[in-house]
Image 1 (cartoon, rainbow, N blue to C red):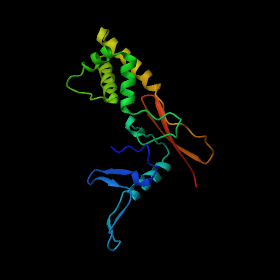
Image 2 (image 1 turned 90 degrees about the vertical axis):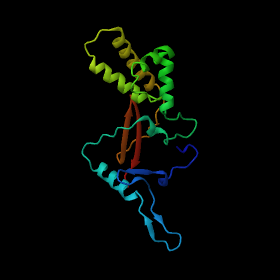
Image 3 (image 1 turned 120 degrees about the vertical axis):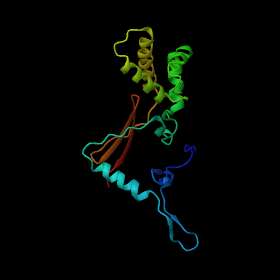
Image 4 (image 1 turned 180 degrees about the horizontal axis):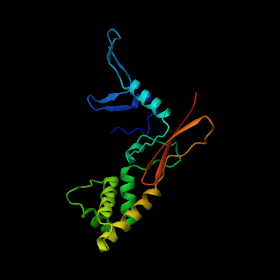
Length: 185
């Protein structure tokens, strides 16, 4: 994945996954020879999705920690946490041995440094073992509590002041919030 940290914000960085076509660039692709349209970009589809979202009565957008990779604050503000940051924060908070023992509970579902997957597996375990009073169930419950606390302590995007003409789009991932805001024209 490209590192966007040093690139200015640009709509041409956007990509849209279209199930029947794969990833589509934002901009249209024109022929260099005659300027004719060779391939339509995803601009109109993205704009349509945003318009539909703005007209929705109720809207909830759930994103993973990877959605913060392209969100950058100007220094010296804290940068949003990525998957690796969250993984390391949980590992540090819970301790290496305890962390490894929790991961070992799911040998057929390797977590591959994906903290969202690990916490999802832990929560499923707890749901399926609600009445269990074993040490293992208690350990998983404590791990989830500590992991969620550790992820909440990671930096999130800064929030701008709101006016009556501002719209906000917020995503929440394991207790931390990312908010995108834009003013109405």
